[in-house]
Image (cartoon, rainbow, N blue to C red):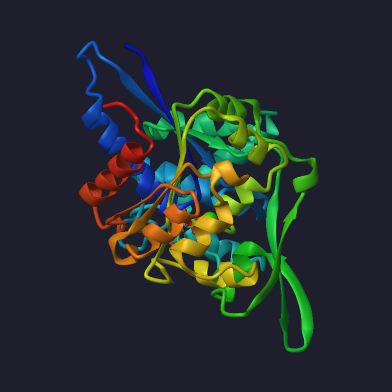
Length: 334
Ligand code: GDP
Ligand code: CA
């Protein structure tokens, strides 16, 4: 009896919900102590949203997942820590530093201080993340996509002027309402997937693409030189879950990101954007929502095994069932 290894490419909040469901499903399918197989989840996480802010290294997607799986997230608000206060941020703005539209909570700042301290001691981001996770016990191995900093910047025109800003400024301050001209991955030329990421992809039994933003979460991960090649080379089946249901992003502004790169906001277009592996793309399977069932014959005719299942991750049960459906399409034995 061995260990079933599941590797997931993920962004922040959509990634966290999916990973939580996957963890539930695998704990159910492989209960501990029965002498049988066990399961191990590794998440390869987008770090394109990372930044230095008020002297601290902030990693929004890694933290969204770490808090959500560690039980420390704010369920109502959908991001950050439960029971937050913002006293430190008020002090920082009195000094005129930081981003007024991107408030960091006091508890959250504790995480960023710890991370910055680890990095200053010479740890890699992978090692620093592992240290943070010792406290949170997410039950999933969290790996940044790269140890080299890669930051997504967004170019747009506003008031007749060209602007290039950090992704979070476009997303949070402008609510992605100003049409993006392009996304730039600053630092990507010098970046590569970590050895841990390459190993997690090469030795996986199945690779899943979470229903994360196809452009600025999954797209950023795929943009790291060598990542696509590693995925194309793995023997594991790669199954993706559509983040688009009935032609709309379920939460957030993924539609604005897709429009910017010339991809229609539909489950079919996103699947074609990733591509079917036999035709030079990445996917061996794709899940669309039941509302998009008409996409199934279309995509199957183009060589991509596709199933229509409920894709709304409303709670623990629906998220776990979605993970089970993804594993079933990948034919992971249970
Ligand atoms: P972020 O980094 O916090 O923006 O989160 P991700 O990139 O991981 O995920 C954001 C994407 O998740 C959004 O673009 C949505 O389209 C998608 N999403 C959010 N909730 C759901 C859901 O319940 N079902 C599906 N299928 N997709 C979802
Ligand atoms: Ca993100």
